[in-house]
Length: 282
Image (cartoon, rainbow, N blue to C red):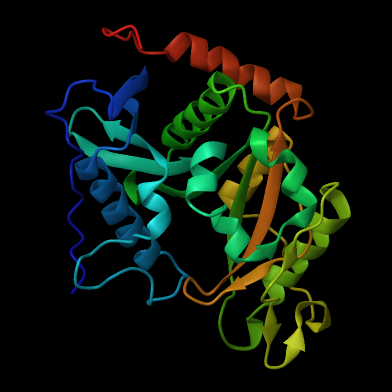
């Protein structure tokens, strides 16, 4: 049985080369870390969350270890939101900067899409992935802190672009793929990027391509995807099918020079206001 105990992050650690506090707001703080104990805590939260979310595959993660882990974790910086009163992990994400993407052999998304059109922007691009908020911390505060931390990370590194795969569950039975089709129609019509990413494994349901499915009546977007679009991100074409997660993945690109200036300015103002004092001057 999957252990559903939420594991505290390694709160006994002070700021160090492998772990540094970025932000603090109310009952939460955000750290950027590569410390193994923190990474395992993030992997455990990812496993717990993905395995209990409606529509996601039960094949996610390792049942024996209780972790959702892959080889990219070793190359990423991990952003962890901690609930200070309990010391428990409330949310997490991982970011892969350009030099470490090279060391990793490419982006995570390069395993799902043919990305030749994005090669020119790779030296200025950070990849965001595995964004998770614990179910009992979904008031909006944790999501806002994660976005603020991610954009602060991009700005601090002098990077221009943020890319990432955003998942939409396939669904089951006669409705399988129909919501994904309606969302795809909406995205390609209203939020098309100047780059196209061709999925290696396009979505098919019962032998029918995504474009052949009857769209669902609703095209309500998942919260993470809404967050991307609100900031000005654009979508690079049709989704790829991720068999492990049983989702359709859309590749999104945010250009910070052409994003929604109102929301980006609000995030940068929040970053300035919430930035935690660094006792080491890092």
